[in-house]
Image 1 (tube, rainbow, N blue to C red):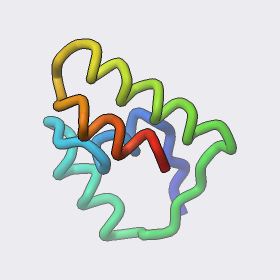
Image 2 (image 1 turned 90 degrees about the vertical axis):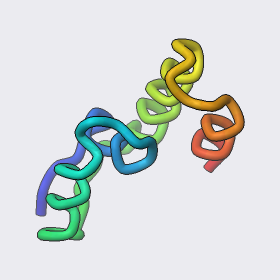
Image 3 (image 1 turned 30 degrees about the horizontal axis):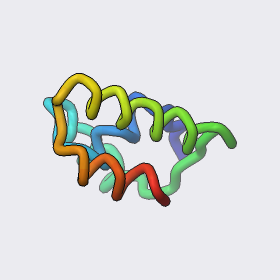
Length: 66
């Protein structure tokens, strides 16, 4: 079991350069240990990508609404 922080989870939610390596790690060990506030950190990171025009706003709303 690995500890996953927001910087390793966001690439699983949004296509980035580190998406494939993150997917490979998850495939090897699907159990995820996360901090209780990781959801908030991921929402913040996705909102930052939206502000930076790195992702489509509708995509950001879909991911941050869960």
